[in-house]
Length: 245
Image (tube, rainbow, N blue to C red; front, side):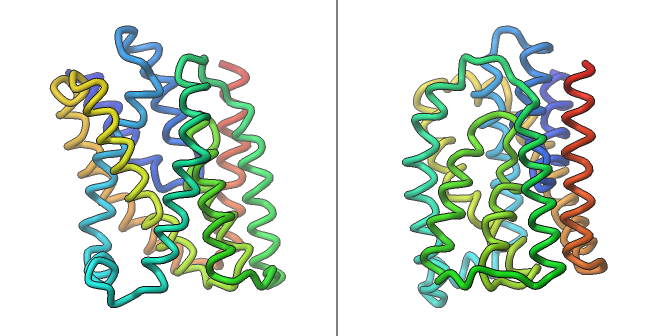
């Protein structure tokens, strides 16, 4: 029971940080819960942080669901379709592969580029729809343990003309539809996860809501290029620690 609580807390903390929460949860669960597929459990725990996204951004979701923001609705539809098309085959390939840390290095370099783009105010003048394709593709790749979903999408969204607040908000909104679809799939394929891991979902939600609020407030207080640089350093540190362990 306490292992599930611990993993729920870890998911709630690391989901929003550009260090792969899926990779961390899968790495820990493959050591602590031998009877559970680590990739499936990592995906399952995203359901708790999904609830945090739905409640925290409830006003934005009301605008989307009641068609008061068709531009953002179209963006999310595109990212969701692309993410699922890219993520599904990778999920089938990696679910039985041991979790590694090399991709944290890739993530770190991506965030360094994000910091550079933001500092120099560089963007590629992509249309919103093209940006959705890029961000959706990167989100789909993030099913691979070690490749951070938030880090990938923050990097992708930084290529467009969005301001830092929009980048973070859209990155987190993008996760909801994909997590919902993957949760439905897991429920149909492995309902035992829901019966055994429900406590982890509670802690994933509670901790996720609090850390989401803290992170967004923190991002507003510092320059976004410094924000990206800080988490690039976290990625490099995580990769080094992974290789040592």
